[in-house]
Amino acid sequence: MKLHHLSLLLALPALACAAKAPNPPPPMPPFGLGIHGGAGVILRNEMTPGLEAQYRAKLAEALAAGYAVLDRGGPALDAVTAAINLLEDSPLFNAGKGAVLNADGICELDASIMNGRTLAAGAIAGVHHIKNPINLARDVMEKSAHVMLTGDGAEIFAQSLGYEMLPNEYFQTEFRRQQLEQARAAEKKPGRKTAALGRFLSSADVSALEHFVREQKYGTVGCVALDRQGNLAAGTSTGGMTNKKFGRVGDAPIIGAGTYASNATCAVSATGWGEFFIRASVAHDISAQMEYLGRSVREAAATTIAKVGKLGGDGGVIALDAKGNIAMEFNSPGMYRAAKISGLPETVAIYGDEARH
Image (tube, rainbow, N blue to C red; front, side, top):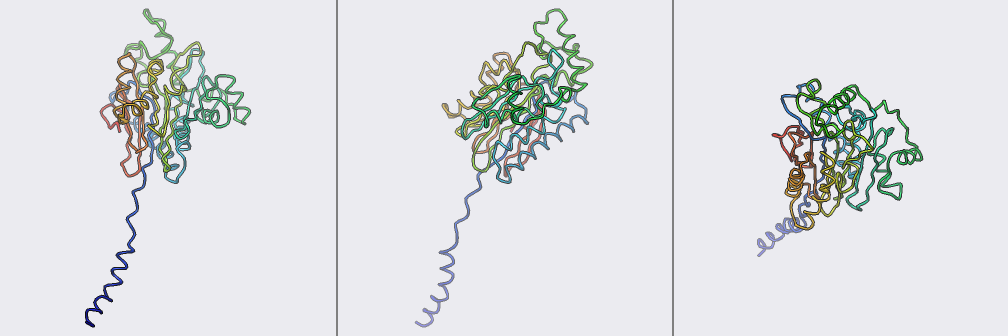
């Protein structure tokens, strides 16, 4: 009996420890982001190794900047602006510095942003002096009673907030000036029906500037992000089309076309032939398929890009859902893109035969 009692006494601490052993912590919810730097005719045989390295490095840098915000618990909106600011500041992309020139030889910038938690949105179009248009779009969302401001009015609003008005020359590059001259020359050829570059170009039209004319015919930048709190956000920024006229505005600043975010479905940023993306309501169409048809973000993105193709347009999207699933769909030969989701390998890609998620 004494031995039996002793055994029980010796077993009690182990039983107590087993009873008090905590349950394993639940897995951390995913967080992360995706970015794009435009879609278009991006071909390996037209990209020098040095230039390709520059693009990959800048995409990785922007991705790291946005991910760092999320990793320390920051909001998805902050990650979106951090990543896009780096792309706007790089002359490699058609947004901010390095934007394409319109028919008057100046850079004309558009941007939009959306908060998936509240469905609040902000956009600006046709500005000429704002260093980082995505920041002003966010201020329209957060500091005005409106969703979209355009042209001089948008810049007056910016000045009321203390923005510095930069000379338009800050945004211009020699590459874009040459690109504009190529577009003007192409426009004068028989059979041309548009002033905007990108619709009727052939290799013969652009032999001197294949890279900057062909592969960047649509060079919008964008970001979609999911933060640790489960909130989604999306943003898009662009210089539009080379040689655009008459105050043309594409899909990038239009909520539901170039940008959309809802915590209930996904965050989307688009890049492509804007007229078609507007007609197909691309960004919202992806969200609607998920909400009403129960499609995955990848199924929805692929279906919507197929619709754009049937209309005759091309380009792509990045889309991210609340579970950290990401889609990078495009029907052009390539799209500058990168993604980093917690717990998964980082992806940086350019060409059509590389990873799309």
